Length: 265
Image (cartoon, rainbow, N blue to C red; front, top):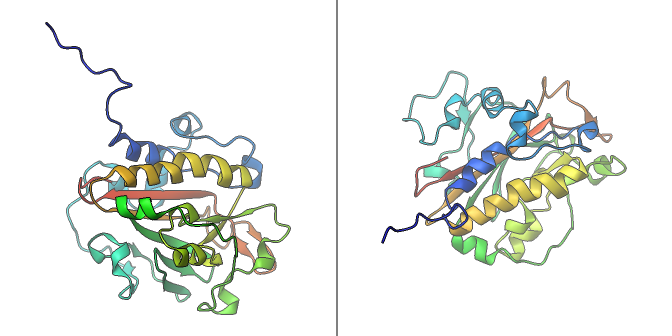
């Protein structure tokens, strides 16, 4: 008797989540866009292509399924000093970025942040997820937002900046992925926040991107490394801002996911 092929519904979706996350990569954050936020495959129809965003991020190789061979660092790019918490980066190596005088490397219990004193937001936030950490990520939410005292006052966001702004204080390393009570408390540092339209932060970004990442990591056979951050257009200095401290509002957010065991990104 001829065997039936498994239906699309019964086929494993383990490897498809990364593709879905990349398609949900570029989600508009401006206040006027929050009434109609594209998600998933709709992004292509909306004219926000993955290829365009990847080019803007300066990583043309990131769209491929396999990681590129290691090459020399491009001129002008350096890795920030995260020697106190290298575990949040694949092979212990942070991303290469153009160095700025106001960049500060911050280590937390469950994530690491490269912070910009110019935008008063993260350049990127790094996490390491796996089955064990996802199983532990059921901590009581604290909602106690605070300014990180390790940053200079002139280079950090404050609670006053967000007050009355109509923007959410959106997590980059999500509270729902914190594996311990201490990590949960630390996740409410304003250094880990990005101004986000409420419909984006509480809807598309959370469901299509954050939850999908967590589900993937919970099924992965090894460690999954995640880098999340903003994209400013045309530049940080010309981007809209909120509050007396002029915290910059990005046009897009990105999330890059690398499965170490599968060697896929």
